[in-house]
Image 1 (tube, one colour):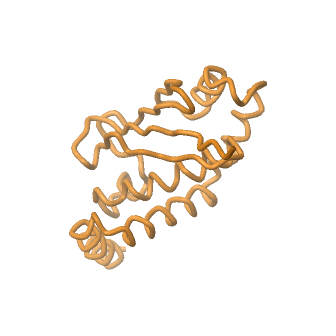
Image 2 (cartoon, one colour):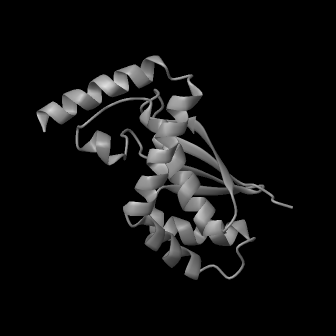
Length: 149
């Protein structure tokens, strides 16, 4: 495992030095989307969604997702702000000490795009407002439903 950890460290050092590169961000977002598909979070989202009568009532959505996902959710126009990971990154790659890289936040972005686009059955945009790995005291994401009309 030490060899894998060293390999990942070298890879993410390169990613960090090219953080503004759209290709790096796209690759990590795809990794996050795949992680969301394989880790079982879609089942959790389905349970939360089953408690929502009106998917367009974001206050109702926030109450349901708060119950199942933890953290803090605040309804805003066309979406919500989610806050989590007070003082520590919740990514298993970090918590299991494989890697500690600000580039992983792009992975989190892709993860959340996948989860919430499935939940709302519409595309969403995710904006990283702050993150622990990028110097914040917690992770804050803005999730907005993209109006496809």
